Image (tube, rainbow, N blue to C red; front, side):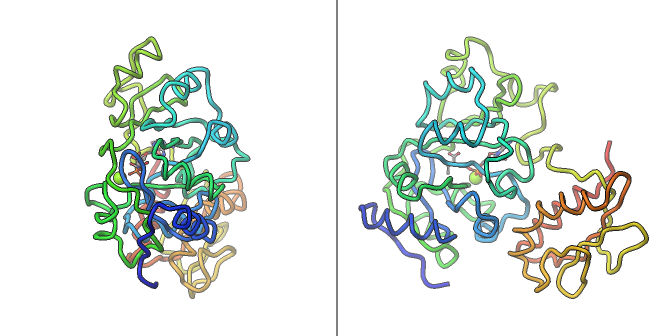
Length: 316
Ligand code: TXA
Ligand code: MG
């Protein structure tokens, strides 16, 4: 990849960033919390590239950044509580996890196969201009290599990701400096991650206390969610051929009824993974079984194998 562009937040720079994003590129964008590593949330390959650039060893669901409430309503179902919170805190450092509309058109890699989606309307003026110019939903985790601190300046982004992404759009230092507050709103309102909007301010709008992390009635912490799409069918890993009654999903030289990537390309395999889990499940039918060809434990292979091991693990 050519050198990462350092774009000024001028109308030209924003137009260039928007064009790169529409073409499937990765662009780090300023938000009021931290810089986000943005890609077209509808494009499997672009989203797979986010995980590759960050070297993430697992597919955590990503936050979808949008310009306005109307686009949020097209992607998710907002309860009256969610609308009240949106009226008070959007645009701003609040992320809401909401039921995903089936026709939202997002890559399943964005939600890690969940039927909920995390949405945020950033307040940073450059982020808002970029979202409007691009005209597409932008999936964006913090723009740092996995395991490193979140970047609050364009220079931090370049220090971690230079040469791995198309561009960084320089909007100066981030005002808030900590990530957004994440609320689960697919059930009783629950705090999933403390952040830029104080819990007290949220409780004042809701008129009730939030459920807090550790509450036994809540789902597990984000990223550890047991509810990631789990196929109905039994799953066998490291298979080189199909046994009777199995749907084999190939990779590289192992051909199957379906394949993650005939070329053995890990980026293509990641982009296909969640679609193929569902497709193989449908083909296997009730009581059926799926076998997956071995995937190398390098690069995106780590995240792919992590996901497959979880899917293959014995269920409670
Ligand atoms: O301030 C922020 O939120 C920044 C800027 C760039 O917007 N973004 C950010 O993204 O911090 P990230 O990927 O570092 O953290 C996103 C968190 C993860 O912990 C993820 O598990 C959770 O959001 N998340 C995303 N979708 C979810 C879902 N459907 N259910 C539960 N948790 C979800
Ligand atoms: Mg992060």
